[in-house]
Amino acid sequence: MAEFSKLVITKKGQALIAKMISGSESVEFTKISASSHTYDVGSLEELETLADVKQTSTISKITRTNEVAVKVEAAFTNTDLREGYYMRALGLYANDPQDGEILYAVTVETSGNCHMPPNNGVSVSAAYVQIITTVGNAESVSLNVDPGAVATIGDIRELQEQISDLQAMIGYTDTDIYGVEVDLINKRFTRLAGAVNKTAGKGFDDVHCFGGRRRCNVTDKGEVVAYQGDAAFTTVGKLAQAVTIPEGQRFAGTYPIGTEVQVMVEQPEFWYKVVPVLTEVITEGENYGRHIRKARYYVTTQPKPGFKVHPGFMADGKENELIYLAAFEGSIQDAEKGYILDDAEVADPAADKLASIAGAKPASGLNSVLTRENVRKLAEKRGKGWEQSYAGPVGITQMLMLIEYASFDMQKHIGVGNASKTDDSKTSMTENTGGSVSLGNESGMVLNENSVQVVSYRGEEYFWSDLWTWIDGINVHNPDAVDASKHGRVYVADHGFTDNTDAAPYEDTGLCPVCTYGYISAFGYNEKFDWLFIPTEVKGDSALPVGDHFWNQHTGWRVALLGGEWHYGASCGGFCLSFDDASSTRHRIIGGRLVYVPSRNQEAA
Image (tube, rainbow, N blue to C red; front, side, top):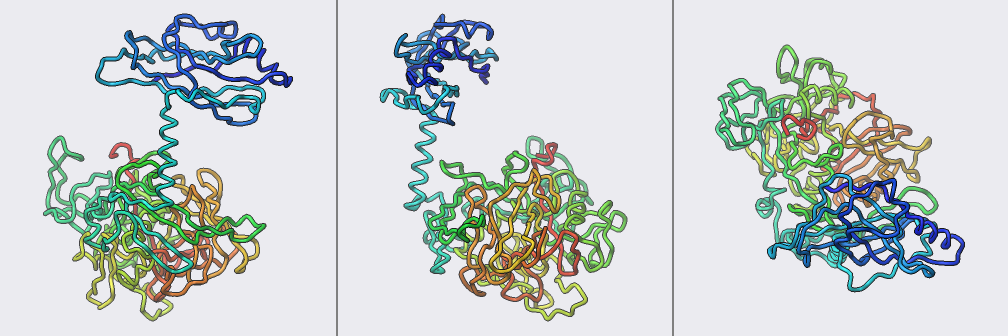
């Protein structure tokens, strides 16, 4: 990869800057030349011309970056090049009205690897050059360029982005893009692009980010050893038969009977785009951001101009082609006693582990101090790459559900879940995990042995109802006084999780949750964090436009809970959130879920 030194402005370039500052002259950049000559950086200031110039390119684009700097772009190709050469220096030229064309600035290539090959008649090689230089006064720079100049890769990318934005506003028609238009004002949902005429379930099975979701067994080291349907696949936390993965395949090796495995859902990577058709300032004169009133949500399984990797696949700057979501609500694996199936033990965050298996009563704060921090420790105790569920992975499932069902109301389309019990005010009234084993990778609702609804979205059981689930990576700060006219602020991270802070790696999302409670009628919008569903208004009802409830009624630092519990009825749902609790909260109605992110464990990635 080519590497260049700092850009050195020549003495003639400095003289032109002086004229520009005095107001007597302006500058017009003309060309960039490539030289094979080896220069010492210390000699560049004295240069008036480049030796051994091999190619010259006219300027294709000039952009003011601030008041005293511009970015100059050009492209070199080997279309007419008969002999190859090493590009060892680049010279930027400009017109001086008094002295004519001058060598304005020079940079030298330092790696020795920048080779431009001769044209072989088969393929064309090219170099895309960006030079950022100070000019004293950017307003005095001519932005005119030669209309015959070669378009740079930057030009092409920018054009692709513009075309993509135009397509998004008009509406994509590509059959490999799947979308929904959400009109929160008129309570209307419209399928878009490849999703038109599709129905939820089998209609999306052939779309990899939907149909590619599948339950699997993952070891503590992150090795995937069996999938739903394999003879060795198990839901009870240990292999009942040995597994041998042949050499040359991922995770090759032999895994003996008794190997500990968690039941996870393998989620393939996808790219997304949100088009804000209509937004509205929340409160004029306040820094509360904007409501999104109408938007288009799109996903695709391949990179496309204008689309971004969903942040749920990113962790500390590293991209994951797959991540693994818990199939079941978290239970406890005691360091000495093994899997705890009745939520009766006191979990030790320093020794025990959070688990995802069938046949266990979900761990709650009934007997254990399951604060968000302690659930985080239990998850991380499982090994490198393991965390409790956090904002990014939650957002993945939410976006897929929204597009597949063209609705926010998962209780209507899949099932109410365990949400209709009468609370006894003293016990954890959850159902044992694994009631959806018969569904496998499919979405749906089944009745368990207690005649209670068990719901699952493509392998994730009880994403809503049964038990509130901690969401890590979201910290909320509310004002000193709260009411329906006030809004808090949401901070998000994808690593370095901790509570009650907005310090790095947490980022200010610009999303401001309303400080009251009710059925959601609007979410906040910020372009960088357009994948988050943070409620900013609660004027809806139990059916529309969202159908899920939101709570945020306390001052200071708050943490996030998802889904609802066994007696919250229609309030529950895949977009149901509570910011009512402090990080110190432990309660019989709250538990956690696992997630495994391969890039956090380079050894198994």
